[in-house]
Amino acid sequence: MRFGFGLVAATLFVASPLAVGCGLDTEADEWNGWTVTVYYTAVESYHSGPLETVRGCGDLDCTESNVEIGSLPEDFVDAVRDEGTGRITSGEHAGRYLNWSYDVGFWLDTEPRDTRGEALHPFESAAADDIEPGTRLRLTGCGSASRICGRFSSATWTIGDEFTPGLGGPRHLDLYIGEETSESFTEGPDFVTFTGATLEPVEP
Image (cartoon, rainbow, N blue to C red; front, side, top):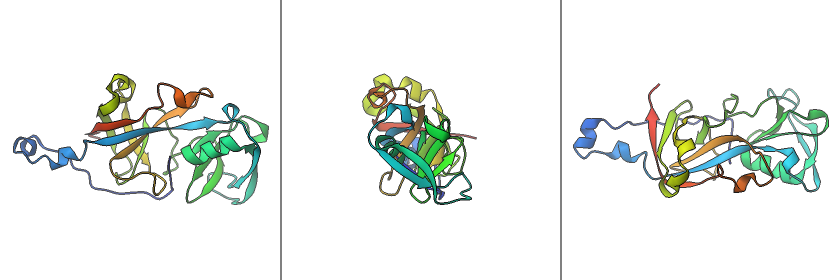
């Protein structure tokens, strides 16, 4: 669920011990009550349906902006629109990535990318609105789903993406978990939603 090639900016606040001790915990409250979701790279071989002809940029630099990328399963193309990235497993572009953003459309690439053009890394890359790209965060509390928190709370997440307009909003963090590994991937243990989660900024 994302993304555009525009960058967002915001001012981050870290509560000082003195402020918290005096009851001035506005900054600390900025990091409580978050909704945390996940996104992933779709894999063509786990999808089916009628074929859809996909057109877009032939490369990351979009040197050709309306090339025919190929005919791909409709279900896979829909997943790429939802998640922002997918790996092609058939045809002349097998092994390459079909990426998508709301302001660019589809493009072929050698890697899944974030809005800054950097490669996405599982259990490291993240998306959010109104947080400065490059900000590093830890998930210190998983709210409603604490029993499955471990793998997510042990990682340090770096903001590089933003949401498609209308899909993000305040206190919503999206974590990149890598490629899907089966047709039932979205029913697996890593496909989670945490409500009432707590975050903590990590100093550079």
